[in-house]
Length: 118
Image (cartoon, rainbow, N blue to C red; front, side, top):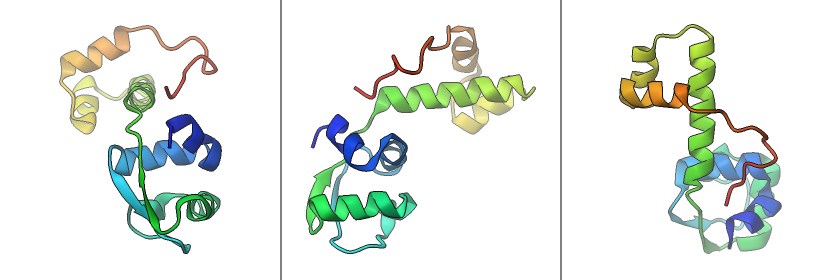
């Protein structure tokens, strides 16, 4: 299933959550809810939609590297805006200080509508 189809099925927020915990995996989707494992973090409505669509089968979960990176970068900018030290931010996100500075110096995405999962 393509990422945009999965997004339509369970919603963007649930897809991002799923990609964070199981991106790149061929995941078994139980036929019954509530689900366990990486699917436990999903809202019940998303679990139900997955069970209806792929219950009892395996489903590849896309990695969404670009989307997850945009989310991380926004979290880094917010931490800096709150006054957190770059050294602490780098440690929390497991990045070098140089990379944190590069993220802080790069332009923010102009329009969220332009940001795409694909």
